[in-house]
Structure formats: structure tokens, C-alpha cells
Length: 64
Image (tube, rainbow, N blue to C red):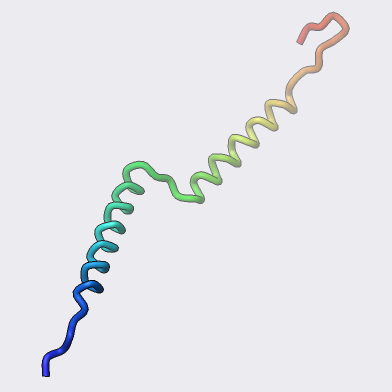
């Protein structure tokens, strides 16, 4: 006896594979990993803190 196949299942699997391939291509072309984004954010925050820590307060004459 022949085995019955569900064509909708194959169509959906093919669509998922194409979408996954397109997503991987876009990630390689444009994206950064979550770890890279978090590292960049942490470095920016640290740089801002260091800059603020070295800022001189204005004196009586208002000079910095």
C-alpha cells in the first residue's frame, strides 16, 4: 500500500527553510550577535562614566 503524504507539510517545511536561509544571510550581512551588542553598550557606558569622573567642576569664575 502506498504511503500518504501531506503536501501542505512539505510546502510549509520548504517555506520555513527558505525563511531561515534568508534570515541567516541577513544576519551575516547586517547583524551583530546579542553578546556583541551588549559588549558595545557596556563599553559605551563605561566610557561615559570615566569621562564624567574626570570632568572638572566649574570654579567661582565659571571656568571649566
